[in-house]
Length: 107
Length: 187
Image (cartoon, rainbow over all chains, first blue to last red):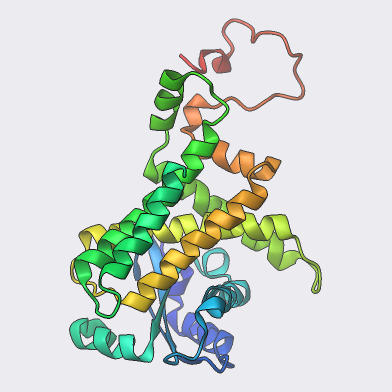
């Protein structure tokens, strides 16, 4: 049975994530992450990226979030090096507080 | 306006119905509609060269969500690897655009499944707005790369493998010999 390296070496994987997210851009408040399986049953790492409220103009939102997720993927190589598919969820602080209240796994 | 563009516009309209509140049915429908916009954009382009409407419709039905997801993930992995190896300061705009399409397709499909079937997840308006923006971005990227060979290969890779025949450079262009295992392609 295949076990993704991220699962069998969780401490190393989490340390690599911490290193990759050490210097957050000013518009990002926090990055949370968890291992699990995605909709198709594939091992996955779920990033929850919390953005400052109204910090990013709508015109820049796409570019900023795309660059952020690209940089993490390039540094970490989650699929190639660790065997997990990366999934990103971007929320503003206000939205995060709302979600945290109704999705207990976020607390 | 073409059907995929209509769907994408509809996704935004649905989102705007309750812009200020996390109205779950609207957010879920908006995500699902945005995914289907991209799904149909790629299929429509893949079969656009076929002039016969019945054949075009039959070809369109050969595409399925699972195979398209796998093709998109494969493409994303390959392009991420290539772009990572690219020397600092160098860019490959075509591959960046294609990566945007493939990565967005995989993400949009996952979001669509979550939106349609995982009712424990709470979607938020700005979150969904960003995901629709991602699909809009993929539409723009596709318009840039759609004629490139790499993009056409990506579409081909979405078809079921048994139905495809890759050109064999080492063989003459004549018909395949009887008994060749590839000769039943298309049956």
